[in-house]
Image (cartoon, rainbow over all chains, first blue to last red; front, side, top):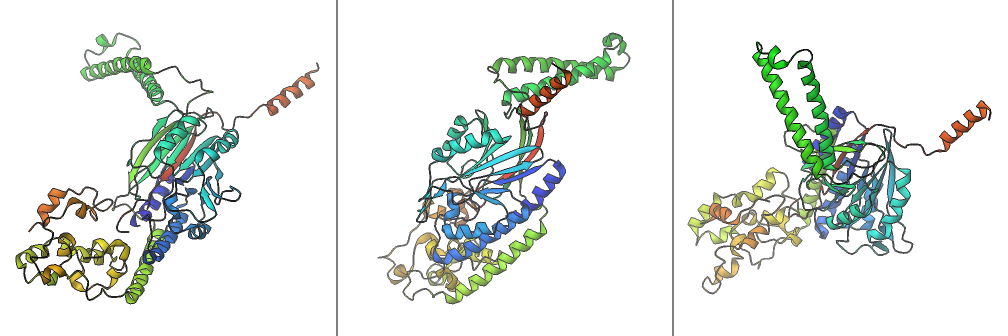
Length: 470
Length: 45
């Protein structure tokens, strides 16, 4: 959550520099990281989610879409969390089964400068069964009526969508009144906004690594310029500028004669002539590729989009730093409490711990101790996450993710990615090595169980084996 | 028709016609957006 404080600072700084009215939106999948929660993980995740809501209040978000992932801790939990929010939680299709009325806010109207903005939210297909009495309706049951109602009364309509990208494309093609769709759950990272018919679909990279910044110039036509049309208009403006420069040289005499004694001026004149020629060629080429113009009631709207990376050296918003620190202390106390209550591993656990392997495999032990696997638990301690059941399974030996609580009570020689993570449980092998051989080279799937996004998205199996092989 | 009546009719017509919701000329808007802040399944928080 360290990126949140930087996001807060950057949003405020970008808004300050822009001076334009600001609209801050999130397309959802904000609160929970995993698709299921064990009893041990639930309390930690709820507290983290509450801190996220508080941080978003600090940042000044206007609306967040309810994603199906946000329901993982249950509908009552989500409703409790939304009560703490100063921003709107939007979903037009997560409804009460009895009367089809939305359980959250379906849409909001926001006035930004002179623009009346309508924002609608749509929740994607359920990840888990939704609470009894609630249902996620198909988008085509709720969206047509909403768009029809809102189109006339608003200057700009935005959809926050947790639907699959293919559905968002269909919506863009079907509803020209929707100017913008901000989507969550798309797999593409940080691609430029995509114009589909009259709608622009945008999303930024997940995990808060980037924020999207879109500077919009919104026209009464309520329509975007086609990208090629926008490029053509820009080149025409550039051509006008170049011609104004050329006219300064061409005022009285022929510049070729007048500037003979001023080689630098003559060179600049020739450069402008070249630019004029290039721009005319480009304008001709672009004009031929542009289809019949859409009839606009006036000028087309335009946007300029960029992504800002939440780099580690960016300044922080102090209030959010304090929030995150408080959460860290809270989770640490919770983890300590859970550790005290946790049961130690059973005496007949199939896992030995690396001290059990050392007597028969001393050279391998020496090699392992120099590897990053041996330091995996220390990494958590450095980040103060050693009591976080969500992190432990990939930093200790012989604990599946569903048993995170057991990881809080492991002996020292199972803290770290020990021999048995790669080669399998060792107790049976210790009793009868020939009858119970260990796994030699771990499979790529075994490694990718932990070496995956977001912590190791660039994992290369063969390269990694060279680093840990012995 | 008297001038005052014509003027009144002109003003009334102007009031009744749909007003442009956005003033002429591009209106600036700064949209800051995000998504999937915690949405991906990952082994560690």
